[in-house]
Image 1 (cartoon, rainbow over the protein chains, first blue to last red):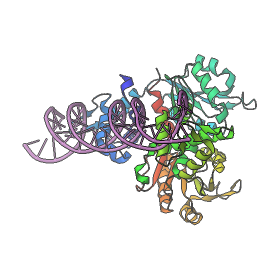
Image 2 (cartoon, rainbow over the protein chains, first blue to last red; image 1 turned 60 degrees about the horizontal axis):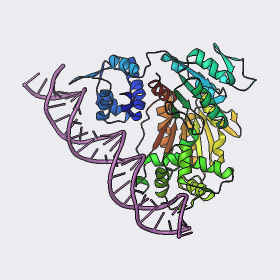
Image 3 (cartoon, rainbow over the protein chains, first blue to last red; image 1 turned 90 degrees about the horizontal axis):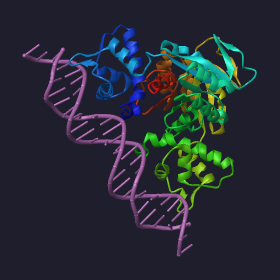
Image 4 (cartoon, protein in one colour; image 1 turned 90 degrees about the vertical axis):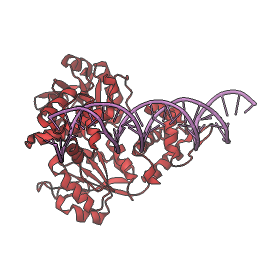
Length: 205
Length: 205
DNA sequence: TAGATTGTTAATCGATTAACAATC
DNA sequence: TAGATTGTTAATCGATTAACAATC
């Protein structure tokens, strides 16, 4: 069943979720697909269709209950579960990501940091010690890490991905500008800043 | 004509380009759509179709000339032109992005940095002085900035986007976790790390 | 009740891919 | 020449949207 829901739908869920959390925070009780769409730039039909893959969360003539929908989307995304994340590559970008400990708003948080630079190994980031990348497989396995974030330089990204795969990680967020080669049961999301920037150049006049 | 080429195609061009630059660097002279596809995980047909929107760059029975194709794609993306970029928000993430001065490999480079924190204004990053965000419109206009990168906290992203629009910027790379509201002749690419991470949670077992 | 809004079906739109003639 | 590979057409696949009955 999961296989039948498209990636595009899954990627919109966190976008809906963020808006709903904001609305909840502002005390809104109800929201319509129209309102969601207006704020996010989607068609209301798309919002309803996306949500309908997972259940009937709305009420005809009324709309969606904000609090309930927040909870449902979190459940769909498994954000109600504990999801330990590891970060590999503690350079500037890695540090910026670690700072975004916003993840902690969910049960998702960086629980281990790896780097291969001897000068960094053993240092602390908050309560986390920076481990050598060599120990990634062993440590990530032991800690039950579920998601890996790659912020190493391009030339080491593939070997890090290999280690993550070996550690049983099935979901990778990749900041390195390379196409990673992984088994097809492993999901990779590329956040490729340079490629995006270069593609934007096309649109300048 | 430009309008008819889909965004998906445009976003693949820099991916092709990166591989081709690598191959060029390694001294490859020819490459086939099959090889490109294999390395990047695309179907060869897609590679050929994408390229064919812009011209006949290949040779039947032979493939593509690497050096020529690099140049052609750069031309398509306007990377042969000078493209000044500004960065707004000089926190950890902004600094990490500035460090990626990899852009400079193209004629694309960060030519201005803005921040609203008084402690940062006036400081230097390499040859660039950090300007107050209040001066964005004036300065960006004067400098002919073509692309804006937003690395400010969520709550200021929209106002920064508004300033960019006012400065005549038509392409924005947005790292803030918000849906920006801009006129429809302005292109926004969202690099939304938290949303991507949350969407990956769906796939853990 | 009348107005609003859902969930879902069917239609549309757009993007990917298979197939193949052209040709190096 | 025979094998390889392009550029392009047509077919397929998938995602978005319009329309609407159901119902609060």
